[in-house]
Image 1 (tube, rainbow, N blue to C red):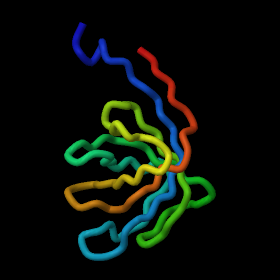
Image 2: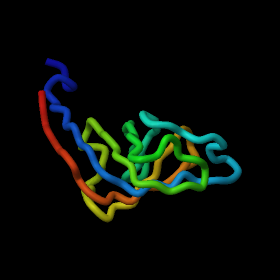
Image 3: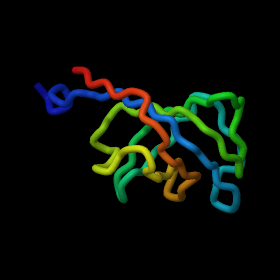
Image 4: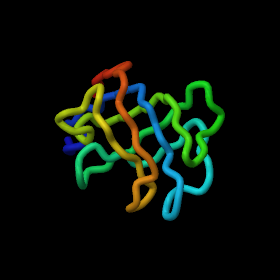
Amino acid sequence: MSESQDDPSTLINVIAQIKLYKGPLKRSTSFADGYRPLFQFESGKKTSGQISLRGEKEIEPGQEAVVEIRFLKREFLGSDFGPGKLFEFFESREPLGKELFLKLLQMTTFK
């Protein structure tokens, strides 16, 4: 078996307070439900995740909202992953926003 087949995936759903930055070198348009940026919990380690909006149709630059975020790999979320953790999201080198981890909804490991 390859290494990826030996490594189980973990479905992780969290509630987070998100802020989409506004300004130069930031996203100039809104994003909708299902947005999939890269997230950084530890320096130099990024992972993909999917944002589900809760009660909003879109998030505009400068706006804050409570969202649900889904991740598939626990290993990229850092050793201090949990409520109270601050992290950022990206599409390139510059962060587009930040989140505050509020609540763990689900963590299920499967092979």
